[in-house]
Image 1 (cartoon, rainbow, N blue to C red):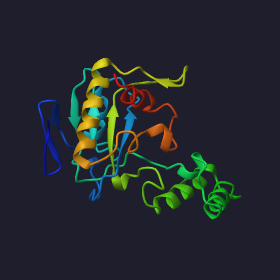
Image 2: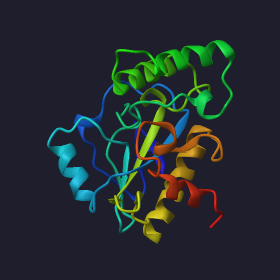
Image 3: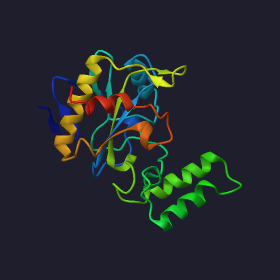
Image 4: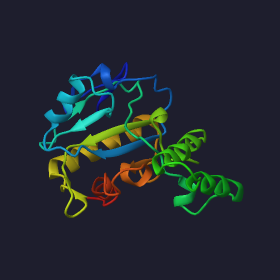
Length: 210
């Protein structure tokens, strides 16, 4: 399988095409993997945006053909997660003091929802994983090309090639970093202030045994 060296993967399945604009601080530890959708119809849309200087992006991009691009070094963080949801609140596992703090921030008067959500996210980021969801500082992002279908509030069904390559790449990373497939791989929509459907189809496939 793929050879990891200096933050890059050498493998016939992967074309290394990194973009400095989406590479940020050092990625010192990898605790998790986050699955994304691009809301675009082709890989070139994302690649051109990265080339033009876009700051947000993920470490990998998988086109509809199944072609995998490594777009950022695994030694660098990418801004791919965004505003975190409070994990213990979602999972009904908050300690009383933590629940009180989160609710106070979520319902603070005189602030926009965006500001309140950001405050909660900042508080979450001060926690250690897995008490919080994955953040930019400790996760690898995989983008899978596909449009968001506003009428149905879901993303395009991934192609069979995308599903196969997503599973292959995820398993490669899980093995390399000593992660657990059923505990350390997440869909973006489940952990951040994004469309809830983002990444859900991909995660379902990973757990399907197909």
